[in-house]
Image 1 (tube, helix red, strand yellow):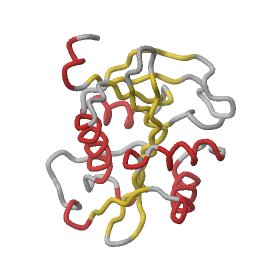
Image 2 (cartoon, rainbow, N blue to C red):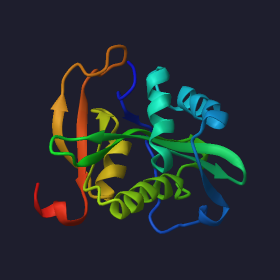
Image 3 (cartoon, helix red, strand yellow):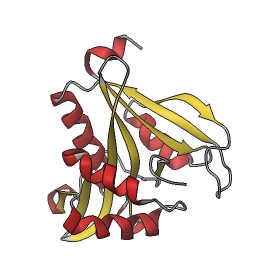
Length: 179
């Protein structure tokens, strides 16, 4: 499927280890390094993303980041900013993934916390994403950060099994009480 058909590569974070933080750095997704994101996505996800996905990632500015561990690109978060009725903005996490050998080092946590911090600074109160219903590791990862399953969409994915996904949503800041 194409842009916006987000998925989450499971991130098996070990709480509190923090072992990778000092060797991890984030960099914005731009025209000159978007190929890094394309290579990561090919390695991480069973879905191929079209040009609009990459345009959205670049257009989101600081909301999409590549993660480097000892100067090796090992993960990324790609987001799209969406305007809701009434003008409020919400963040859609199109993809978040870390290469398997680098999971458990806090890289996925660092990417997600970056988006939380940026959202709070910009008064964005809602972040959501899609996760394939059998991706238990990703579901557990997001639930650790306060995401909740808010919807099930049947036949969301065309070429992968199962084709169903959950919508996971996190409300932050003042809006947390206004679900």
